[in-house]
Length: 344
Ligand SMILES: NC(=O)c1ccc[n+]([C@@H]2O[C@H](COP(=O)([O-])OP(=O)(O)OC[C@H]3O[C@@H](n4cnc5c(N)ncnc54)[C@H](OP(=O)(O)O)[C@@H]3O)[C@@H](O)[C@H]2O)c1
Image (cartoon, rainbow, N blue to C red; front, side, top):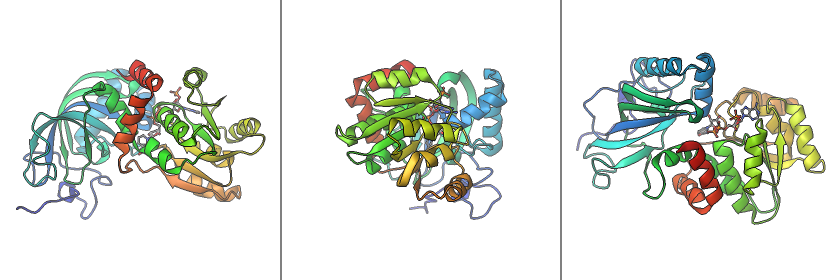
């Protein structure tokens, strides 16, 4: 069999030894190489931090957002926002599969799937933009994408609307990490209660087994009240997560001054590191899922305030994360309704 380029190094243009995710430009051209799989792309789910940056830069104008996305993809051969560095994921249909691909024999041409690897390393060509839904970070396109042999994917389930699966799978790493870290009895703060925050709350609720305390904090009082109405949190804090001391004071107020054992940062804006660090107790843990997190700010910030805190980078891949996430939607009718209202 022909040699397989597992990580797609051969698709990187002009930078020897650099992996596709770090590369400035990758080559999305056909034909497929051994071990690759070709997808007819239908929709892109742009990462929340990236979409917000593009939207702000475009002054909210959809045509300008599309223009920026087209320019990035045509320049880089992938959808990687040069400002935030982040991507997103896509759904589409298998168009061609090489015999060397690990899923040859399992996947068939025409199967619908969602990629679970980031768009930041996925060779992509956009032929046409069919529509944009700025409120949910989605762009409907006609195009083609290539998945390397190492690229993970999920078959789209039959029992959930595809656009709902796309939205949830985009952040599948977050609830799966929560499942790993939450123990019964913990005090937990969810900072940023959007899509990933809601899934994390549902997962934390399960893992707490009726003990502990679940606090949701977000800039939107309406989003918080919906989540509380669904029983997904015990207390809410309406706050600007960039205002670290205010957030800490509010967390102190609802925890009898104890602060929390675990913060999960799911906010979509930069400069929320210190709110997370100040809100956790000494010896506690912060999971930084937000793509707007700065390693330097977090590391120097924790040192600067003398806080002994374990800080975890929210790896987007956790084994079984797709099943965990779709399972949450199936097992929690209120959460599913919330996602259907927003993302279908
Ligand atoms: N680690 C990974 O592998 C991975 C994978 C996917 C996504 N992510 C990242 O995870 C983060 C969350 O993604 P998501 O899809 O859950 O985004 P989302 O649905 O947009 O949720 C983000 C939430 O943060 C809120 N927010 C915005 N500004 C705030 C502020 N100043 N203070 C408090 N809350 C604020 C938003 O409120 P409004 O809606 O009112 O603005 C929203 O409710 C993003 O940074 C995304 O890039 C990470």
